[in-house]
Amino acid sequence: MTRIAHLHAREVLDSRGQPTIEVELRCANGSGGRAIVPSGASTGKFEAHELRDGDPERYDGRGVRRAIAHIHETIAPRLLGRDPAQQEAIDAELLALDPTPQKTQLGGNALLGVSLAAAHAAAAAQGCELYEHLSQLWQASAGEARQPAPPTLPLPMTNMISGGLHAGGNLDFQDVLIQPVGAPDYPTALEWIVRVYRRLGKLLGDAGYEGRLVGDEGGFGPRLQSNRQAIEFVVQAIEHAGLVPGSQVNLALDVAATHFFADGRYRLASTGGAVLSAAQLIDQLAELVDAFPIASIEDPLAEDDWEGWQAITRRLSDRVRLVGDDLFTTNATRLQRGIELQAANAVLIKVNQIGTLTETFATMRLANRAGYQCVVSARSGETEDSTIADLAVATGAARIKIGSIVRSERLAKYNRLLRIAERVATPAWR
Ligand code: PGA
Ligand code: ZN
Image 1 (cartoon, helix red, strand yellow):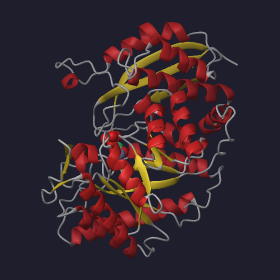
Image 2 (tube, helix red, strand yellow; image 1 turned 120 degrees about the vertical axis):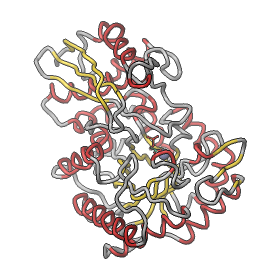
Image 3 (cartoon, rainbow, N blue to C red; image 1 turned 90 degrees about the vertical axis):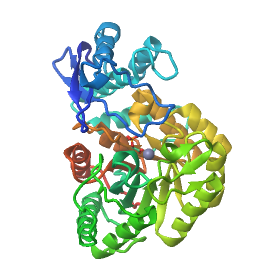
Image 4 (spheres, rainbow, N blue to C red; image 1 turned 30 degrees about the vertical axis):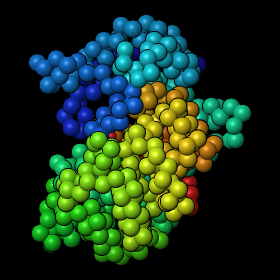
């Protein structure tokens, strides 16, 4: 056991060139750990608060010096001398310092940086890999519940075409993704993904669309006519890669419907201007599921449209994973409501939506008990920090969603999984 001797936070930049928080934690035995906080663009309104300075003189108000001051002045004095491996106690202390529901006092970004850095430091102090330490925490957090899953490699779901708030409003749906479900192991899965991505770039270019410009997460951002056309291109790319759409590589969508929902209607501004009721949007999505090998749809409806969510779950849950992102915001209370209402059958897990590792585990545990699949996810604003790769492995999460396979903030995670894959088995993905 060791003790936290020093806690330091600094402003660094994320993949959009926006400031974010890096926390560095040093222990009495000389070991230490470091974590950087990610940041979303299509954020849900129930997410933990991202505290920004609001000072227009610096980074257009997006500096994070206030949150950093909270770490140095309020959080550090309470954590010095503690064992960094006592994650629950550390997180409980953080929550006691900011008991507001959305961490508005100190900032969810301040809390998360400290929470994750503690895990890194604890792993280093024990001389083990981060996923091994997280796995210990995860197993220990099971309590009376059914034994949690052992470490496994998650199925990557990888962004091919980007739209929505991530790519300049070219498409209404935010992502068309692929899942290499038929790959025998993770390294092969990654090679398939890269192959499909390359073929897609060529297909788009040959058809006269921009086949090189990419969105925030590295997916192509062509100005296509419809969401359907984007899906068609991706299916074609899978075929051109010599792979079988459906059995080897299937599709996933992130509709991110909250961002085009207003006054009770879904307004598809970029692709034809249709104004749809929830029922009509569900009909359109069901048609796409009939026509294409789509295995997963994230945020098909808006974050407050519980009725719409219930309707699509009744209609499609036996064929498709319906993933709540903005709907649940990694929040156990909201997930509990979804379980009771039978809304969705999977949950996106983004650590900065909730703010501490312990709360993340609680949401994932609840999901496992209810049979909701967990999809550990990056944000559109990311960094070289690869903690979520270890988190997904440690918790046996079914899937991981990192963005595309270009841009180093994405590859930090894909490459981390390659290293882990030398030691952890790839399960049979479905
Ligand atoms: P965000 O996008 O990080 O901008 O919220 C990711 C997603 O919607 O899944
Ligand atoms: Zn999403």
